[in-house]
Image 1 (cartoon, helix red, strand yellow):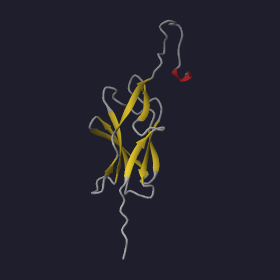
Image 2 (cartoon, helix red, strand yellow):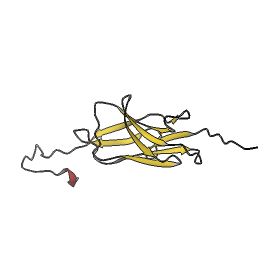
Image 3 (cartoon, rainbow, N blue to C red):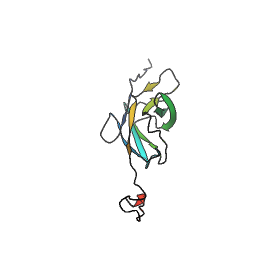
Image 4 (cartoon, helix red, strand yellow):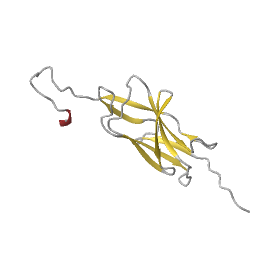
Length: 136
């Protein structure tokens, strides 16, 4: 008699050692990412292979980007330097396995936290100085 293996699969997003949020994302005044940010995830059990895996990026409730990833085990996708965010909106990441099928599996939506990071080109205390933000 043939055996059918049934998986109860889970997917988690994590950054560093946290399973609850993505590490803060440094953005400049215009909302552009200053450097790349990795979004890491794990699919359990490790032997489960999904039909596809994507990291969905939401601006509020609106899906604004899909990034393909590996459909088994651990993986990470990257938001590139220069990716523009509206700092007045909330952004979330979610991993979706088997998208568009009857066996779709979704992780929790995890908020992407922003931190404003920029250096003024001119220091008001020293108006003759010219600062280069890439020196820091």
